[in-house]
Length: 286
Image (cartoon, rainbow, N blue to C red):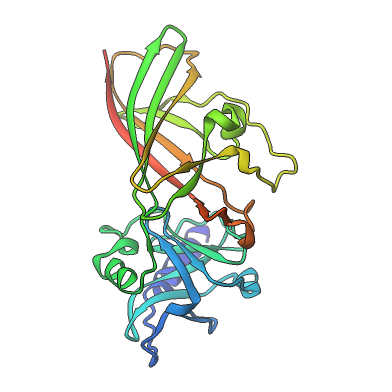
């Protein structure tokens, strides 16, 4: 019975995600099956590094969207479509999704995610990017790179670089300002798996919750100018030695989310970067 229900859900989500939207107004770029329509003038930007769509205003309607579908349009034709999925759902669909309430980005931004499938990724397709550039809505966001992992007895030193690929200066979380415990409230940190996908290392920091929990301080942020890069290091405790061999590294570099209200997004002319990016690398330990 459970398998039949799961199969039905998969079929339903796949059907909804493939739903074709038709819109006679060529200025409409984003629509939902609940009837919301957003023109290019309604949109502030789209961050291609986090796939977050920012709007010029707040929309209380975002809090009421629990299900249904959405689509990006080009002259009335569907570029790609996806589904809304409640954030508390344990179901993992294929294709693009937007997590509906509780939404991590308040009532002025929506994040398009893909948990499985869809290669190549439609969210940054050439067609989408060109349309965004034409309407001056593209924010390229951040690029991350893992540089090295150094192991010295019981310490694992993790080194990575973050680069601002956007034309605008951005404010990013800085572990040197937050400290490692508060920083790891916003991220699960570093994971290392062997080639059989067995987890052999994970972050051991005890995360420190902000006070109050839904707040932030500008003191935690560092300005990263357009085209600039910053390199960071984190010293993790290594409780169990890693055997020689090849490993896959995964690290989520975090930004803020629900903590930032619409009127707080810009600080002295600099935009706070929201969301997160995942850094990956294969290493060899001798």
